[in-house]
Length: 429
Ligand code: ADP
Ligand code: MG
Image (cartoon, rainbow, N blue to C red; front, side, top):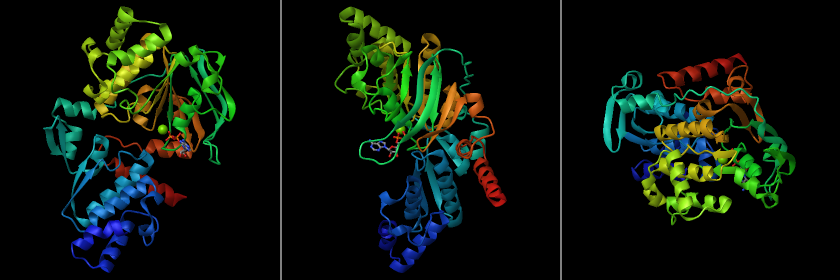
């Protein structure tokens, strides 16, 4: 409460008046226990609640303009939808003007009256929401509107599994609950298994168990026909080589003091003993494969864009000639057009080289674009699992239904439709 009303008090409103206004806003924003939630500390509320409290803080001093800078980008789609609805309602009820900054056009389509598209610091297009979303004039805007258009038809199962996870249970040291509960999935060679679920559902933990960083408490993992040691130390050199990993934060995954050539060259030397000219030649081939010019070999990570860094991480993984690459939120930090390019590259590389991906993401649009199979995780369990066409088709379990119906669609009025639909469903129960 103190933080929420601080600027309001500076503006001269009395304390009791400011507190009453804050509680009013908490209520308008749909926060639970509006009378008392102000007494909690920030770490005692969830991410979505915190975002709504910050919206209350911005609205409390009765501003004429509020700037929202990516207020829902870090939230799960299931939480995002509530926060978007709350922000929209609050703007409407208080009559404040809002500048809403985001990279997600589908979100913009729900909340804005006018849209301005920026690129490299320049305004590319400006118009009403309907005009920009429905009839964009500029090529860049058209690309943004159609960005989620990769059409990847799932491959028929049939190939031998490269990975089988059976009855895996895992927990972290010092905690008292299982973070993974009896997880069973498998992945045919050369295909993609997307693991999707909200933050904290256990996706990254599954990756840690498969890579041997967190030994499973129960269950077993079979990789390329071999039973994998739960513990990293017990794994063979081939186990390590054939199972590679790429992370969300390409920055921290690379040594900033090494050139691209050194970074990609390390696994070549380590696994294949390549040196000198032979290593250099192979690095250049890999740069070709990730569609980056050979001139990039001498650059340092700081001299690369976000998308280029992620491409270098892909090349480093490919250098080991893996059968499986685990990708943990590898496009989540990238803007949608760059992310799209990375997904296309991953699909091409799979078609050429037959590498399998275990693709972890909280983004369903990405799942649609890339998956052959999908595992939906919730609270450490796999709630739904199967070929993409089955998992994304009804009948759904409650969680998958909520997840799928919460992904913003690129059309006007989507938010109102979903909310009305949910109100009706709730009234019917
Ligand atoms: P996701 O990747 O789906 O967001 P994680 O696998 O990172 O989820 O986390 C699953 C659960 O495990 C969460 O409840 C999280 O708080 C907990 N967790 C993650 N890492 C650790 C850790 N190092 N120690 C203890 N608990 C952890
Ligand atoms: Mg994670």
